[in-house]
Length: 133
Image 1 (cartoon, rainbow, N blue to C red):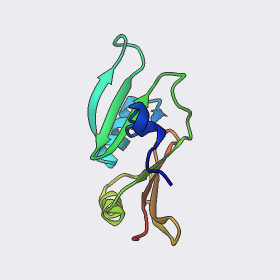
Image 2 (cartoon, rainbow, N blue to C red):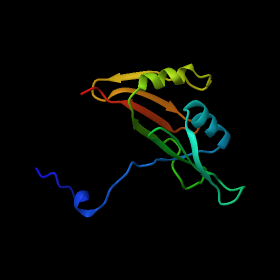
Image 3 (tube, rainbow, N blue to C red):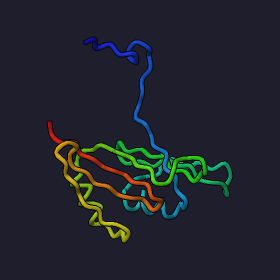
Image 4 (cartoon, one colour):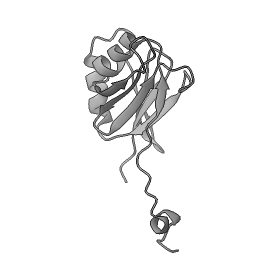
């Protein structure tokens, strides 16, 4: 089988996708994404001070867009993010005083070790550490 792909010959290079998650309350979004998950705000945009927020938050290689705009994202979305160190993330999150959840770890021989958290808007973030090869 040839190692040549259409992307290699066309000059197209895909980068990591960035999910857009619908949020309804900036204070609750900041409490969850910044306070609980430990993300940082990379930038924020509003067309005017009283209009909806569109922002990027990140932590390491995890990059998320959060939007108050009606047409962006669907509440109840799921983001699947692979990482190493899911046990350390679990320990960090369960040690925090975030009253709305204390997530557990789930282990599956096929997919590895997973940690799922839900934001205040019904979106789920599934952090998964694949099994060692």
